[in-house]
Image 1 (cartoon, helix red, strand yellow):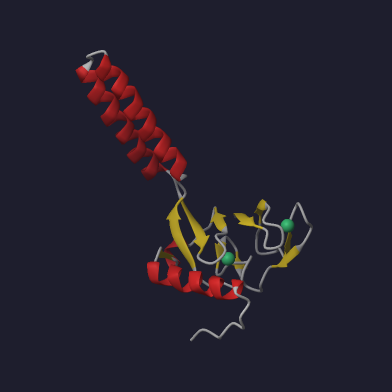
Image 2 (cartoon, rainbow, N blue to C red):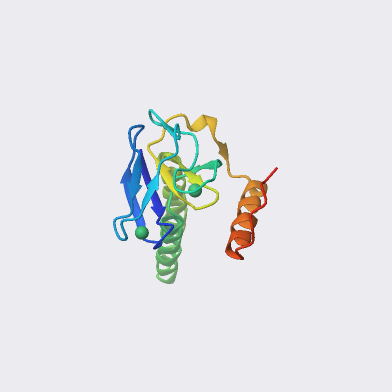
Length: 159
Ligand SMILES: [Zn+2]
Ligand SMILES: [Zn+2]
């Protein structure tokens, strides 16, 4: 599987492949290494985040938001041009077409796993069914944990 993560030391974005034999991952920029927790990766499945202490990952569409926005924007822009030239049918064809492309792309792209806490992304992962979709409560829990860490207060063990 491939993971994309921001280095905890220098924030450089790393894209690397890992499997169950990977013991450490190193940042290409600052050379700091992260030890892969035991049993975190089993065959093509991932049990927990390997970059941070988080055990919770969520499933999301591997669909970059900018792409969706670009398609819609280009669609609306072109339909305005068509409208300007009184090409009424083309105006609607373009609008519907761009919406359709958006939907089809969304259905075609695969899923990825994302860590609630550090935002690391895991692609080409098997067994996605064992992970849950995004949950706002869990997200909020991790956000507050990170905020507390940032204030450098001692971390209370979560219940
Ligand atoms: Zn680094
Ligand atoms: Zn993480």
